[in-house]
Image 1 (cartoon, protein in one colour):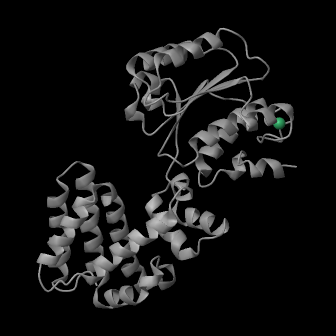
Image 2: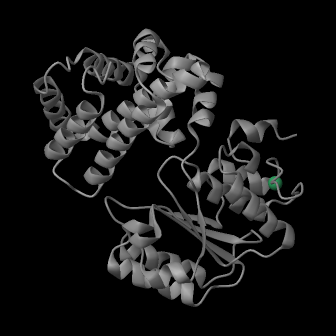
Image 3: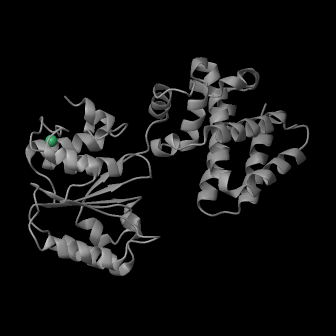
Length: 340
Ligand SMILES: [Zn+2]
């Protein structure tokens, strides 16, 4: 009977790659021990907001099937269509969640839920609350109203007031494994495994980002990058510096470029043991050649060099200098033709 629901992607079963949070929430429902405030953290596009709405639906369903909402009753239909009067969603208005929005929630909380068993206040991107709004939210959390669950979503706990975090039951949502994202993209058609694999890498664990990707644009950029890596002559260090410089200039895509370079070396390594697991299969000849020339230790050293650069850039080091150091490490370790 849940066919309609599945289409709406609003069952715990349909939330992909978040078995641990879903397991925790299901046990809470089973034992009827729902904390009055939950905090879901993680990157965008991994199911935090969908899970919050799905939980609210399960708690209000008139004919629940175990821990799952039926998807068909009056209450479920209202949640699915976004018209349930007791499911209140607060999201940034412009760049921030403003004090007035939180005040409005407090006003509504003075009254009992209109028709549901459990009113749910879902605060999306709670890290975007300005100080005043955050303090007002803290007041709500300090005096939790009856029959109400407050679910905050944020990227990480450190972006919120510690006093807010300490009043919530924290459930971290992890990036979705690469293989799962690839599987979803292939299952939904149009993308072959190669393109799906590349999109999954660049989505860095966010299914939302993968599904919204401009695949043509991403593939063209990635092919250019891998051809660039492959065509660098390592007879001299100069082309490597030029490549580092080009990467550093494309600031918006630097993180993605380093992720692709890491996967390139991962492929070179994989080629030795599980060649069927190589992601960039359209570059298989180059990958095989590079793999045969290197020992596992040598390849691991290169992956470490790229990881170090990623960490340094994440810590705000100068990108160009960091990339030059990375290239020198790649160059020194292999002496010649390290990238191809
Ligand atoms: Zn229902």
